[in-house]
Image (cartoon, rainbow, N blue to C red; front, side):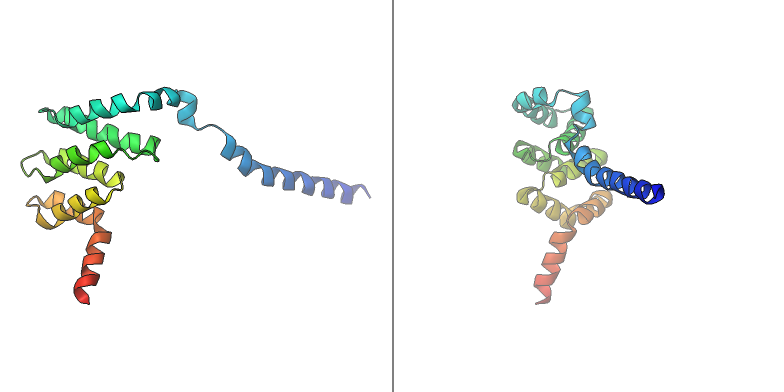
Length: 156
């Protein structure tokens, strides 16, 4: 008699644990929010954007690379922010055939992460027209959907 009751209690305990664990995990603060004061970051987002735009327009390749990488990180931390002020300066960097290749790659990745039609068009144009094979290949990979769409249109 004790054995079925024990099994029933154990089954109920497992059921409770497995149904409540996912909701518990979803309601826990993220590691980022535990380590950082994200409300402080969002309060100062406008100033952060302005400083990053200035850094993207700097003459220093290192400064521009750091800004592009920071933008990529901000996109991950704040996925619902549009960051539209970065589109134009990143586009200028990607389209500049004389700019450092690594900088152009970072700018392409950051621009792709913004998920904007204007940025996607720039990446697509660079994929078609760049003389730098590295940039061309990465841009093609990022613009795959646009290239597929154009191929579909030309086949009709």
